Image (cartoon, rainbow, N blue to C red):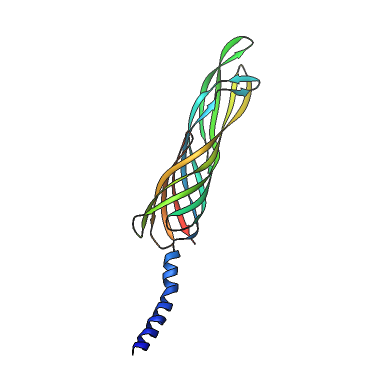
Length: 209
């Protein structure tokens, strides 16, 4: 009788090992995400050239809506690495009068200014704290870059000049967020990230494979 129980226990244990291993590994693997992001930043436009004239627009604030994609790998329950890439959906467009020096004379020139953030990319290490089976919070740190641009068209006395300038923001990136999983593989994720002087707020769909 003792021998039968021992064999039965061995068979049951052997049968449970794959299930336990699967449960332990169910959080690991590749995941992707896609969503909408708002990026807010200050662009340094103190030395913009338009038709041979240097125009000082100073620091200009810009708020840009972007579409974001994410690819990551969850190493275990608490650690993941991921990359994030965003593309702008259109910039700010406004009119402004700019003082310009022409042949020693200062003239107020009517201009149209378009500010945009063309793209950004960031690589992160993410530390995760599971709160429940459905919800988790996390912090992440990494390095990234964003590229902003300004296009200026100025006109005076029937003459028109245009110019453009790019401003790259690169450096340390860090942030926090949370994810609610409504199935075993699907979730909704919210992030806040600081990249140098830029603030990035995202809401996205997440899918685990």
